[in-house]
Length: 73
Image 1 (spheres, rainbow, N blue to C red):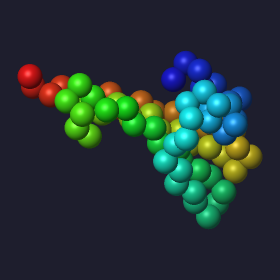
Image 2: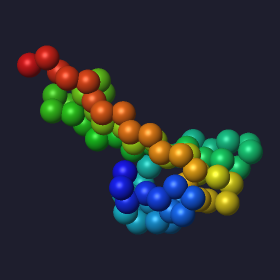
Image 3: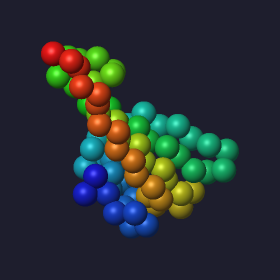
């Protein structure tokens, strides 16, 4: 998350740093990019998720990280 600067990082910057994302485009021109990394038990519950909202101009507007839940092992 430290590599993404709100108001500065572009889609190209993020793509170069993190690779291909799940992209959700909106009619307004905004896009949400989602990255998921599997957790220790390889389930979606344990996965860490990074979500980035891009403005229509292509600049990052918001970033959210959701750490995976403990697996209970």
